[in-house]
Image (tube, rainbow, N blue to C red):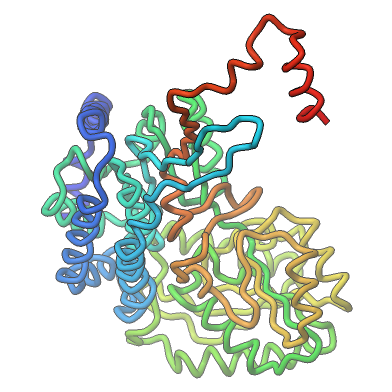
Length: 476
């Protein structure tokens, strides 16, 4: 057993210890229920500095967990958006915290109204294995910006990253402000049963249902980021090279182990061969070989690799044509492949793929493509490739998804000033930027009156002439 895995097992918390951590955070919140903006900025600055100073250690830990993870992908997809998100929150925090003035109706004057944004209390965050840094830091930034105490449950599939993040966060935060919980699935379920003031889960839809069910026992509100089968649509006239290159980037990043990776591509029937060739060229241009290629990430573990190989076996046994774009790699570096002749009976067309397999689905017209998407559970992302503005508007108005990229993939997630979240089977709620601050805040409506009280004019007993005049003026 590797040292980090052994230590992870030894450091697994018992239910009583988990509850004690929660109670310590609850007491700390009660003692300081409304941290000032400067205090919150100091928290964010400390987080920014420790991540920046320890970037190489984080790259190494993530690489160890994956057996091989591209250092550039970790920088691009984990460290950069984490640091940018912190910087954005620090810069805008004062404006977010400022009470929002609201109008008071004439009938209720004199009075003032405002919305005060108050920390919720103790927030729980359950982090998946595919982006163990960014998917921990992103919601952590929102929760700290809103003034909360935070408990993070890291995935047991990334023990080296979990241990390192636990050590780094303990260096800059006391446990009653931010703490990291490590452990196997049973710890995760015990974690989801704690009476948090908000719980955010990122992961599989099947597990999300269990998390939501556990949270319901405490009426804990949840944000669920669940993924799903995110489609890409290639239009009838977009240059194949443009679409193929951008889809290839979104599908090959992290070897396809991305919740918003293109899961399948809808291609006009008469352009399938053209697209496949353009896609092959793009992927081979990115990764001329798999052997010892530092840029190509491995599948996280043997269990996930077996799952992906199972999809291939099931699909090919049911008539799919597998087109391998590489020779099979070593150390779980799975060859990127395209699947043709797919059908709904195949498991690969039912489950989120989360790996380097790309099914191609032909379509005859845009109405048919929309119908195909809309018959299925709503995805976390949708990608459209075509430069016709009218068709772009149709995509936005006639399909549902958590987010959309027009003529690109993935990069909507990295925008600090846009919410990120799913819909339906792909999740509920959203975070990032201002929306993250709002998700982890209570927007409390406040109506304020001073000494003079005009409302007494409508107090009982009823039927007085002035009351009848008020009713005539305002009840209409």
